[in-house]
Image (cartoon, rainbow, N blue to C red; front, side, top):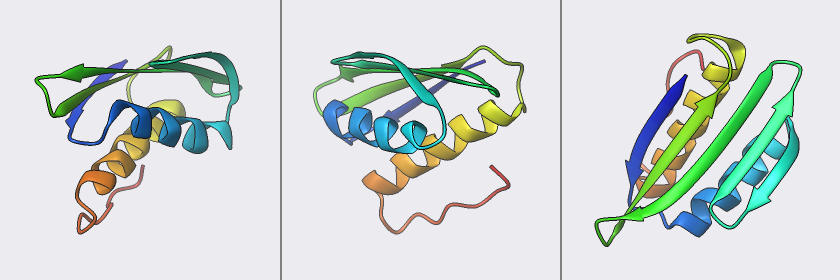
Amino acid sequence: MKYFHRTSVSPDDVIAQAAAFFGARLTPIEEEKRLRRFSGPIGHVTITVQAEGGHYTLVTAETNQPGESEVDKLVKRFLGVVHTLAEPSHVLRGAY
């Protein structure tokens, strides 16, 4: 599955958040300036970021599993965390 999120959080902050969020749950397997890959028993995750439209960052999160798998729920939670970085008043809800 592939997920997209547009945010005002800087690319560096998103990548740092990805390393902290997924690094505690999955094994980092690749690290580049704008890309992080993680792997574990539940699947693989790739996070890429790119500056878009001046003040925005496009976050692409991709897994090797079908939708609603455990790793997909983890990716959705991560995108919610990124959203709270941009809007601290946002409340994370949901089972993921």
